Length: 98
Image (cartoon, rainbow, N blue to C red):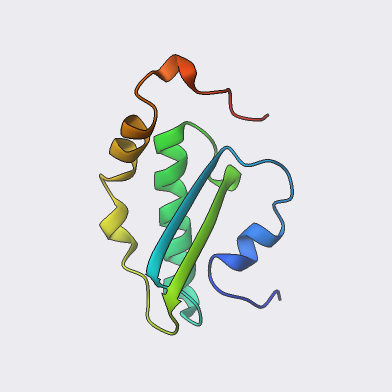
């Protein structure tokens, strides 16, 4: 079984270009077990929906407190707004890698 922080292990296997990325600070989501893995899945699902890709195409990164579960529900309802604000012209976004 791979060893690493909740967001590190899934991303280690992803070596092709990413279609989206999610980063946060304040909580590393490391050494958090099943709760941390659930937070990773939830965050990847939200980010993928926001940018229009598959969850496996999202690169995740966290830094901060170790051993404290990440409250990923704080990202719910936020990512789509962030994407819209970052790309005011949808036609200016390059297509996601396939």
